Length: 198
Length: 181
Image 1 (tube, chains in turn cyan, red):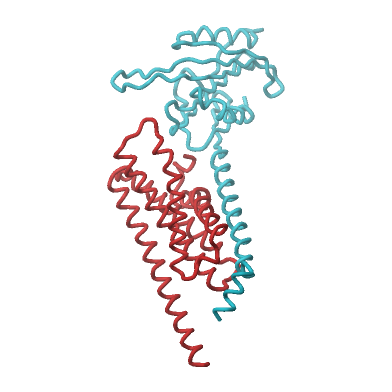
Image 2: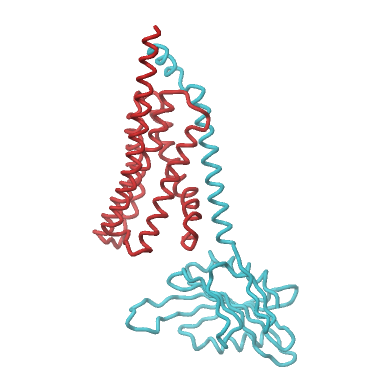
């Protein structure tokens, strides 16, 4: 018995060991596949947000905080778990005169946002949104904690506005994110714009 | 991070299929491509080599705490101890399955089941740790250590029971063979 075992060991792995060695890799790949699918479905999971009064409909990530009561915008969704800055998706509607172009609205937004601390316009580009010409403005500013007792560091926020004209209204879709995570989470805004109906 | 707002079972499944399976697979690979099966002569050998692999894995896991530019000594020490104990404890599961396969022929899914069980133990522990943190227990103090010690103690007792049972069965079979011959 012991001599046979020694021979088997000199020959290497037994058949069941070889089979198990292959199967465990398949099991690991299967479990990891489930993990990757779970992660992507959790991150990409969305809920529909409808604002009938303004005629706005969009998909936002699930479990985000929704605010539709603020008079400054039609709707706003924020990631409550994001630190140090809550990732924000926002839609605002501005009344505009007849013949107004997205450029006029962007100039108005620049004046409005100039009140933000260290506000800088990074770029302004023409894009197409839902087969309609639109203007995209990238900018940055510094967000400061208003409560001095919290002793929080200021946060550099990068923002992106997309402006499109609907009749006598300008639709302004906004994405705000902490600078270092802006590119990584840019897809959230892309998904938001893709599903935005106005 | 992406599981932070998920329910308990989703979290267990999520942690099992990501952190759990990765850590147990790495420990398995370290043993499988070095000493398996020639150096495993008893079931306890499987556990011993698995503990060694787990210590190595825990050491790598703790590197970012050791080289933290802004360390909190007490909290980091407790965190290192928690990582060490948990990894060694969960590694016992894979060690048992490897030891068993080194000594006997087992069905094709045997090692895969060991990997899944080890990963599940990881997933359960991390999910419970999150509950403990959310319910007022802090994972960075003594309560976190107590939780992991109890968890690992449970795993160790289960593995001990299995080894004793399998050893007793082998001894009985050996006795039967001797009686027949």
